[in-house]
Length: 273
Image (tube, rainbow, N blue to C red):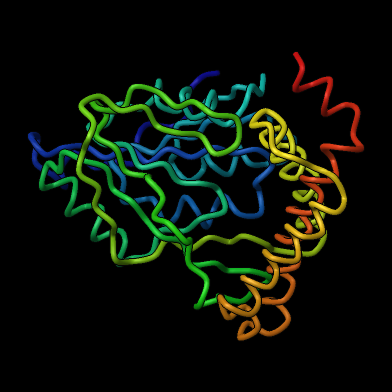
């Protein structure tokens, strides 16, 4: 629970009155990816990592890349962990970056320009997917994702899976950055199978709370429609084998969300608490 090295910022490289940018990252067992992520964020005035109790070298690698690391191993959901990141952030702006993401040089320039301009709004990014070692150039997130916030506006996050930022002074302007944020979604079949369980069960709990129907037939229809949309209409087939696997794993996750609602008793017990 103690910080490591000081901020990666270089006070001599900027004006004393310039707004400061904090880049904040959540981690758990990300030793294979955290170095790439943090190297892309090295331009930040402050680099913060909240680790959820890694059993590998994630914490040591993060500290070696100049991040201040805080360990909060009592996992209570993504929103709680993001709020913990927020509590440690000292910059005027906070950009939330995931351990499986990489900031491109073009996006770096846009972020720095927004901070320098004292932008009083929310900065949004679109992902470009990298899966199984290949950049899928036709895959971007369907909707822009809110990532850059003015610290004084950001009150907290809530939500179990897809956490939502609660902001003071809404409605605030949204700026969508042109450059993509690279999202290393699937590194291997093994890691995809491991993630399948986690995200399928989280998604199932969310569906159950929302009162949506579940079951095998619902899951088959849902999964098939998602695969058709991604692989055919979103041009996933142009990504070759990696494109197929990416679409297939997402469709499987959608199927198991619905199946778990009907056939996993532990889910009902968890949602009912």
